[in-house]
Amino acid sequence: MTAVEIVPSGPVSGRLAAPASKSVTNRLLVVAALAGGVSVLRDPLTSDDSRSMLEAIAAFGADVEVEEGLLRVSGTGGDVRTPSAPVDAGLSGTTMRFVSGLAALAPGRATVTGAPPLLRRPVGPLTAALTGLGADVRDQGGYPPVVAGGGLDGGSVSVDATASSQFVTAVLLVAPYAQREVIVEVQGATAGGYVDLTAAVMRDWGARVDRQDGARWRVAAGHRYTARDREVEYDASAAAHLLALAAATGGAVTVTNAAPATHQPDAALTDVLAAMGCAVQRDGTAVTATGPDRLVPVDVDLSAMPDQVTTVAALAALAGGPSTITGVAVTRGHETDRLAALTGELAKLGVAVEERPDGLVVHGGTARGPARLATHDDHRLAMAFASVAARVPGVVIDDPACVAKTYPGFWADLDRLGVRWTER
Image (tube, rainbow, N blue to C red; front, side):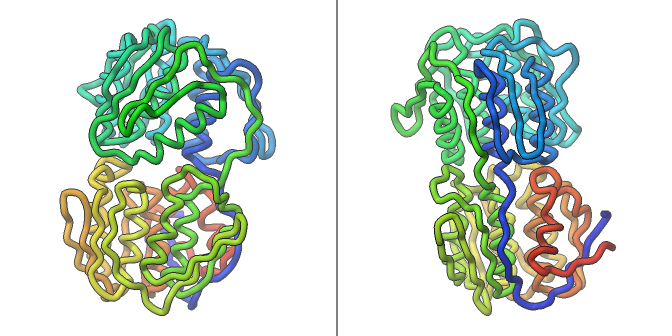
């Protein structure tokens, strides 16, 4: 599809399951690739990003069998091989960064590259940290491609996580395979919840990783990953886009598989929805958001869940007054400069947006069509704009297929919720 137009038809309502978590799937694929034995991942995410990771771990020697709703991964036990050709991460930032860590364990020199937009996303703090732990690592002025290998000695290292918490995760994931213990000192503001998620996965698979204080992590030597059989939990980031449809239209949407015990930071988006006037209820694994007649403006710090700047900004465009979003400077280095993109695209709807270094002020209540919104090859912009389009007539969303990065079934799920849309 080159474009879609959603035809507003009143409150959106329905029940459905969110897809499996991209963040969890890609972490589990790395630890399964490094583990000894055969691991089973049940109901993993199938998307462009997860396919990139699957192909990458196979290049480093993991044997992957794909069945319906199931992945069997025969791990390397840490004895990764050097790929015979450059590993292509596509457009996946998690694959680029996590696999750069994996490459550091290769006996020879492994190259990790990607599609042109991915080559504009920074890796310098990660490559510096891997070098500090004894690997032979090169990048291109702080950007991909990355060439790495030689193994990790271990020791203490600082990681500047200002641009991405993924730098910390990439180091931690491979740290159990260093010759001696690894101490990681985290510097700069970061979405620390994603590092907590990484540590939880590592512990579950047999590594010994401890937070020594708020900014220091210790990974013990000799405690490597052991094969596991695990079901992949829901994607809280994807669920947020579904619940936002209810918020935007005054409807009621239930995500049926929202596990309450999750380390995913974006699960807290329900608190923001409540602050905007939604009623949020939980019944076991089911979470329901019911939207108000009109959303309430908010003043919110999204530093713990910066990916949700797209969701909140889109909803703020519909709220009755100015909303202030802070703590999201990191999103300037995501799939696109999300703050600049949101400012420009919401302006097409007649919404005044003040772009600040670390956030936005969205003067809501004036959104109107017709308008054609560009998605900037960014899956989260496409899904966020769907909420606005479900409320405001005449909104066309370009390049809707970019949602395949993390949520290929998004538009089909909108159908299941009764959202009317047509190809343009």
